[in-house]
Image (cartoon, rainbow, N blue to C red; front, side, top):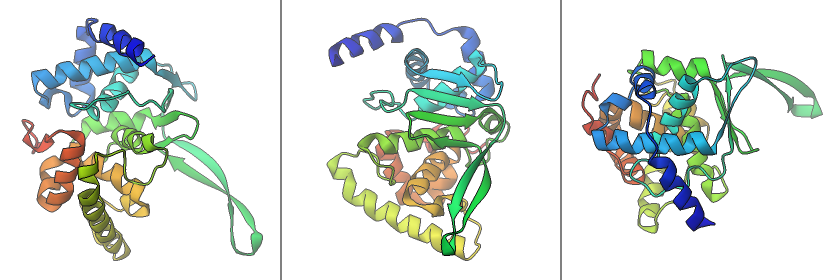
Length: 257
């Protein structure tokens, strides 16, 4: 089956990439035009495979379009460059809402009291093989490339983290990387928790202080979105992510934009 899948994907990667999709990526992603021609070509091939293998579903009345599908697939593909990949094997569907959506949850408080709470979300990793995204939040990144926030990169980083069966901030890693990964990410996570408790402004914000899994996803966002700032403020963390992703986005043209 593995041989058959690789052969099928090889054929898909040879299909032409429409010029209209390239125009979409230039308009809707903050990174596509900064990639080298070789990396753009690799990313386009990954996009073709993801569009063929994953289901893109509109929710709350959203009509699925090529712009939505190609933009989201390109974010997913950025995390796969220069790496052997099975294309998010645990993922079958990408569910897209037009706007941030509300999730109602029951929370048990002290004394056994159960209360219902409503939480507005921009994206999440589902336990049923799906990623959920708010299209407004994905699209907003293109208009503000100075921010570290990128909900699509965040959720696909969670999906990479989940490939070993758990979401705890350590994706499947080669053995030589494990020791330094634990030391560097553990130290910077603890630092972020201290800064968040003190109300101190940080490059990474405060959301990553919730758990090691959120820290990895937030750090991945910042690694690709504000690489030079991250390399300056978190040089060892940047180095660990550069080894994991096999990329150096701080060297991209216009990385200071």
